[in-house]
Image (tube, rainbow, N blue to C red; front, side, top):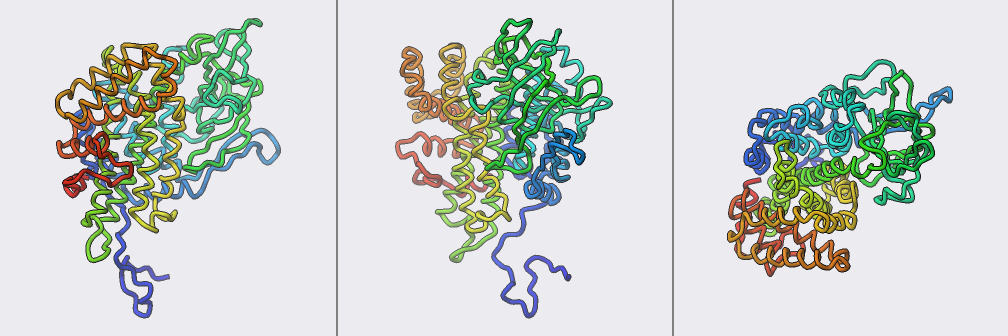
Length: 558
């Protein structure tokens, strides 16, 4: 078969001559093209990481990486509960493309670099690296995120940490389940929720009987187990010791036991998911499964709370990464396609939509990067208090915006966007998971109220954060005054707080985003964002910007 260059006319095949189609968006530097991300990396103290980010930008923008991202979602994981002779196997086979994708991410520290090499800006640098990889293939970001977050729970339990943390910090990737001999690297998954409980983890029925020391034997099931071929899992169970109930406890369940045996980890089936198909999610059963205590018996929620905060951070980062992919593809199409005598990007209606998509992305990205900065090793007490509230606030709102952002960008591509040949159909299906994972909307909004009522310092720290831009925008000042008034009123009236939790979360999130835009985005962009999101004529749909907006200048920066 003869191969022809794209767009080359073939004699006798004029009906198949392709014109007015943008070329494949491939072999680009995703970091260099993302000016707002580079500005944020420097502003939040991680300029030292730019060489590595530039190198990664070329990797994820390459044709081979993009092809692997596509193949990993075409050739989906397959579960093998038994081998050919009927012995329990409980393994999931992934396409080699998936292993190449996750191997590239781990090699550049997208998982645990901030823990392995702590220094100022380490968490910001890791957040930027995570977003670059999640922008192109979101499925692998699940185990990458959980491995990063699990360190916060494991590090306080030396009977686990001494053996496992060096493996988690490794940048090697070994996809095989190795039972005999120690693996030098490891990934961590989670298995928390059950059929009857969902976000209500205390409704779980999995039980753990003490085997002495830190070991427990588990019996039960988990309805969602993320990344079932991970090397270890954090699990919640109601534990007992010598017949005495201890309460809900966090346990570490390895796939391979220390003495060269497989742990009981029965994969019942894989979930048929709405979003990415590259990464498996499974239903699993424990029947005599061995787990090791994380933290203290009966304090399971406390043991996982810092991990949950970090996975919620990654939900914000993952959503922002998806927004960047959506925006980048929409811009590429609009800059390469003509309609009605002009490039799409130069037509005012399209320019307004693209500018609005760009502002939404930048606000989400800045929110994620500021949150990452609050998790730095040198974070102050004020930073810790701020992140307790800012994390659920941001997770609630940014993740809610993701699906609509993806849809609007998809529409910019017209019919192409609606096909599986382009990445935005996959992105549109993927974005909703960020609003569900680690707590759906109501759960997160109620956590916002809980943080305010149980930790007054978090509310004070949030107010201080907003005060940093007081006087810079009359519109924002009015919004902040209304929001802080609502916050104080709900704190004094807990019975009303639950019904107003979503409203409060949205108002707090928009105030934070507007403040961050004022501090870190060009003045034109910040003022437009504030007017569009907080002004009297705020638009419900993307592309409804204030009169007189220089949309072309906003688009040009992206």
